[in-house]
Length: 466
Image 1 (spheres, one colour):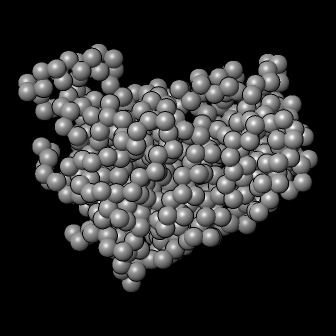
Image 2: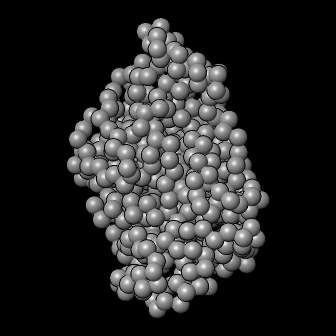
Image 3: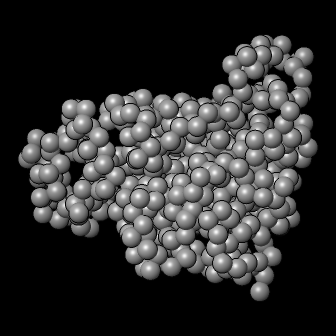
């Protein structure tokens, strides 16, 4: 089938309401044939937006798709779907923005979107409007702003949550290149180094939201005293070993293509561990979804270990996001640091939405990949609605809860669990304890069979000692 099943369903929905908008498509092609396919697309009068190994990005209408599939060397056609960060509250906010600004999705009904794996939940994790206003007023009188949270929320610094995964006291990365793909990063008390940056947005490379800084300082930042206590990251990478690729703007989601492009850049730069606290709907099976296909190609070509958020669509099953659905990713669910149970919102497996309605395909791929297909792979601290985690931030998120714009703030989500896991895996790689994603998964198998909620269980340093 040359039209991705997700796109085929979207087209069916669009045809029912008689629309044929200009779409951004991702055309998967045989490796080495990108320029030939791009040339044919231009002959059709279509606008080619770019290409990377194995894929061409093009603007076209639904009416053009059939002709595109008949071009020699084309394998299949997918949609450049919206992708968003996986921090609770932020994900629902940016998901709404993504749908409202997408030429196809914004015209579909909620039932259509649900069939495409895009479901909306109340963004209850973010402060209410009165709380938000109170926060901003408090900032005007900063010296008097109370050092307390607006709501009755318990919090822990990454300093404390890193101990759950037994992150070592010697947390300095020495030789391993690492990367974070997110909302940007910039100088900060918990990120005191000159590091490599690539910016794929129209904004400056700094983080104008806060999510990217949270993840970067958690996984690979620098220790620093704070009013919460001494901040200690899971790992600390020197500047010449750390890359941040910015793909999100302050209030803007990104898309499949930008995620794929960022993954390619991170792998090509030499990153051995890439932390990705993001995701979107799975397009078809893991062998059809373009992000999953490219993650596999990059893993096989460069050996890059991609550590990816499972998603925040729990407790429903079949809610794993892409590219975390890939059998070649290390997919991270969230753990509540207080109860040590799976966080209420953490996405559950065994896989993404596509397989829920295609059980025969699931059984076929399960036979092909075994327990690598079952997701998530593992858990790491992500907090829950009343048990949040504090790390370094900049941008509009700073002071959203604690009223003080001091560069540190609480968040929860599989977004927060992912850098915990990525930091520990980077330390294991740097010390020669693991070399591949398979090494991580083989060590985790000591905890027993996988479950749809926890994967193999919580990642801990002791699982890798002998």
